[in-house]
Length: 248
Image (cartoon, rainbow, N blue to C red):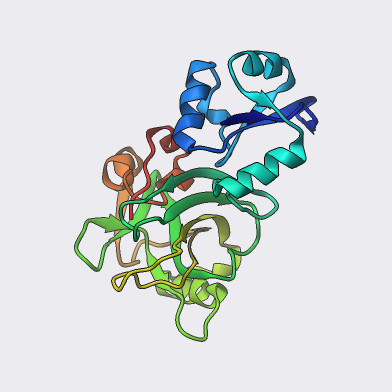
């Protein structure tokens, strides 16, 4: 079922409604496409609808409902995606094929200073002179960002500082771009991360004088071809969300 609450949320000089589906994200996207709603209005579990489009969306088939009831029904449906203040759900992949059955992968852009406490991996985004620093994946499956696992007894900040030391840059100036969150309720024997949630954070480092760092400087023009199918890519290239690029 498609639901919409009244325009009551102020932003950018106007009021906004929330459009949700209690059935599936696919139903929500299909309805939005038919109604001429841009994918840029998608916020992970809902579309933001400006007040001038409210009547059109109701006419197209969305059921009007008050905001509290809309939130309750969305939560009850299992399609509600939690996030912290100053965060945006870029995209979500229910039934992510690289995770155990029934799991979900969320890509969340963040303006917080620190990632969530259940962060298990940190990655470095290092740019210089029209290129980005990449390394070979340990499993031989192509290129990756410089990465460090959060060790036992560590927090994400410890791993971040260690990664900065590996690269020869100060982690003090690193900025959190966001994170990928695995939501796994029923892990199998092959799943190595904590449950029910595990986060994989991306930090952008300031990178003066990295000529001798281990790795490869990949030109910007080649980034999408080499990295565009990675699970974190939408945090680097927001345009990737429309293509649904989220892979491990």
